[in-house]
Image (tube, rainbow, N blue to C red):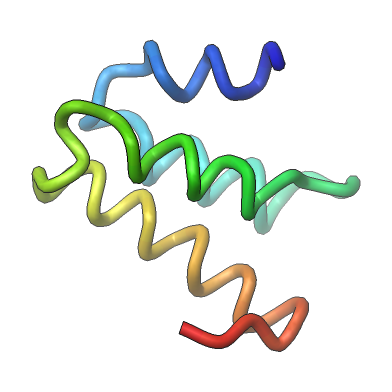
Length: 69
């Protein structure tokens, strides 16, 4: 999946800002749960930038679909 490859290869410091823009400011159906899964398996998943990106996705999922953490 092209979107997943982009997240996998995106520099960690850019993740949260890019996801925030895509999820909140762009209309469309976003595969947010897939993106979250992709971030969880990154080698740098425990770093602050990737954790912040996961938090952006989780906030979006809770607000839009009743996702439970």
